[in-house]
Structure formats: structure tokens, C-alpha cells
Image (cartoon, rainbow, N blue to C red; front, top):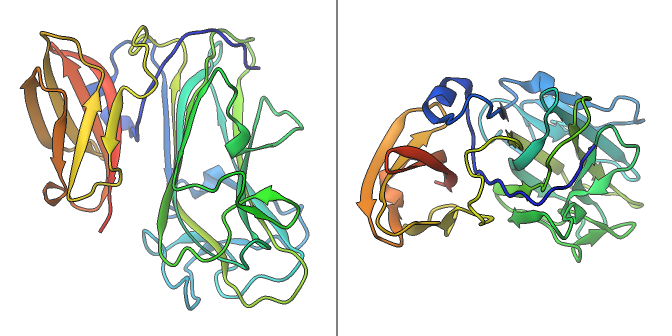
Length: 318
């Protein structure tokens, strides 16, 4: 159950378990990280086999446009070999529980995907629900006025398919990397687990189609527990901003700074390997050079006068 309190927490992440000791500032801070490449953690995905004709399959894509996974060999695809039929509804879910006596305060959903559908007719969309509620909400409407909510490379309320549902539709032409960023103003909760369920749904309408559907890979879900004290009191929704992100030839990193403080910016791979260290004092921005990084997702850790203060992340595309 979500109970709202005006306390802000912020984070950007992918945080594998080996990386946690390097960045956890307090013992009570709880992080959740899962990266589903479909070569690992695929068991976290539940395909709804109660839906007649559910198309979702985990395997090696073997179509003209969907010819390989983002991280080979496996992805989740609306049929790994065939085009999708008319009047189809196919879903899979990812469910996350908060620790006992706690709740999530901040979160990211990231995924790589391709889609090939009839524009404005067929497409894929994402829904969420909390605490096993029977009511699902399209993720772009999960933006309570008192909560921070941002998307990157995502559909909008005007990008609708059959039934007026906002969705990804048309042809992405290449891999896209989409994300949702939440700040939930959550304080206390009941002792029961506070769950978040994310549902990916593909929907097609009437008429024959030869399109390939929706292919998704490298789904990451990253959350921070809401009672942790790492970022409390920093009244800013995005303490670490990298723009453009994914990196252009040169991108700018900005964050909430205090005058007279010494800062150290460390950049890590998602496996916890440090690849860059940038000490500075007084500057308002840090420049990131794309040539310094290979394609992939990176974490930013910022220390303020030797004390951990901020998270961030950025993507490097080929």
C-alpha cells in the first residue's frame, strides 16, 4: 500500500550484488537490482499462459527484421519465427517485492527493444499495479502530481493503437533503449510487502498482418528503499543529469553541488569495474567523452568530501 509523505529520494542505477559494498552508504539502505538478458534471470519473467494464443517466447529471434537479440543469443519475442496474428493479446509480467516493513522510494525501468507493427492499429504497451491491486494503469499515467516521473524514448498519450491505448507502434527500424524513472513520495507502509508488478502487453486488431511484432531484451529494474538516508534532504528530482543520454560525442554531467566542496566522480561498469575517475572542485559541469567508453550501461558514483552522495547512469550506444 502506498502512503505518501513529502520526502524526496533519488537514484539512477544498475547495481549488481558485488557492487553494493562499494556504494552502500548506510546499513539500512536496501537496493533491488535485476538485469534480465534472457541468458540470465529469465525466471523473473512470468508469461501469462492463461491468455489464449499468448505469443511471447524466450529464444533466438529468427525473422527478417528481428534477426538477433540485443545481447545474444536470447530475447523475449512475440513468436521467435512467425509474424503475429490479428486480434491477439499477449502479456508477460515482472513482479518485485519491497523488504518487510519497508517500501520503494525511487526506481528505474530500462529495456532495449525493436517493434514492427501496423502504425496506430497494433502495438506494445506497459502497465503497472501496486500491492496486487486488480487495477492496472498504463505506465505513462503512473505520474501522481506529487511524484517525480520521467520517460526516455517512450510513447506518449497521443501515440495510440486500436482501443485508444497509448503504445509503441509502427517500425522502430533499429534497437531503441527506453526507460521510465519514478520518484515515489512514499514514507511508511503496512507490514505486508509492498509489491510492484510491471506488465508488458502486445495487442493487435482486425485484419491480416505480416509484421513481426515486438522484441525486448536487457530489461533492468532498479529500486532503492524509501527509508534510506543517502539522498534525504537534497531537494532535487534528478541529482545526476547526463545530457545527451545515451552519450553523444561529448555529453555533459551536471548534479546538485555545494560551494567549497571537493568531488570525485567514479564511472563503473554494471559489473562494478571502475573505468574512469574524475576529481574536481567548483566546476558546474563535467564533460564525458564517448571515445572513453565501449557500448553499454554505466554507473556514476559521486563522493562529496570523501562521503558517498549521488548515483547516476548513462548509456553508450555503438
